[in-house]
Length: 274
Ligand SMILES: C[S@@+](CC[C@H](N)C(=O)[O-])C[C@H]1O[C@@H](n2cnc3c(N)ncnc32)[C@H](O)[C@@H]1O
Figure 1 (tube, protein in one colour):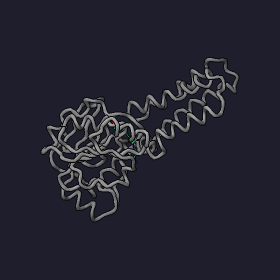
Figure 2: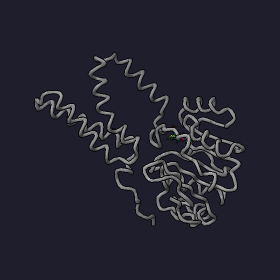
Figure 3: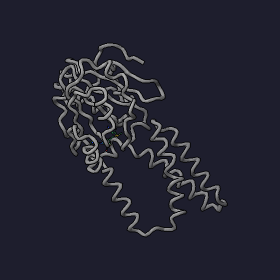
Figure 4: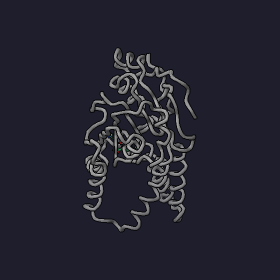
């Protein structure tokens, strides 16, 4: 039997649904007060306060900002833009969809890995990996940070958004970057898979890593931990970017091979370093 999902409900809602709910709440409060005849700017202020208050319940700094800013920004744009023509909205939506196809939104929108976020990873991951994959590589910031740690490694990236994959390939000509779905792509043969995705993705990522990576390979996640699996180490301090480091051991690999279900038993090699 699968253990209960340890993530609270708000973290299990697929992104960007929590943000959409916050924006919707802001507009609902705005609309209700406006309909009740409340004088401006009170409806807008109350809507912004409602959106901000509900955004505080969302996990992750950037997500909170996006959820809180959606209502005031859209209210401002609608007020300031004096009804732009419909084609302008369609063009903006088409551009957004090209940059962020829906699948990419469901897994994680684009946030780059900060340049120094992976400092110290090379002290834990030994021997140095020869082949490294950034699953969902965005514009290649994660790959750049990984290249600084291991200049000799062969770098690979897979990215669902076509424009982002194209730009990443031009920014990092030495890396092998292609447009594709990281879940449909094989992770086999890589010594280390790096992810900067979202909390809800991590259980699936661990199951895929345990099934496809060789024992001894590494799964490294910026910010989001694998629920129920003990990391070899965790770098960084709470409140800053944290780097969760997992190693595939023979037990996890065997469990993944024998079961199609996600694995929740993990490496027991060492306790997390905080
Ligand atoms: C938070 S960004 C991280 C970008 C990069 N890894 C970095 O650290 O700088 C997540 C990226 O994953 C991509 N992504 C999301 N789901 C994906 C999928 N199923 N297959 C490939 N890429 C995906 C998004 O388009 C986005 O660019």
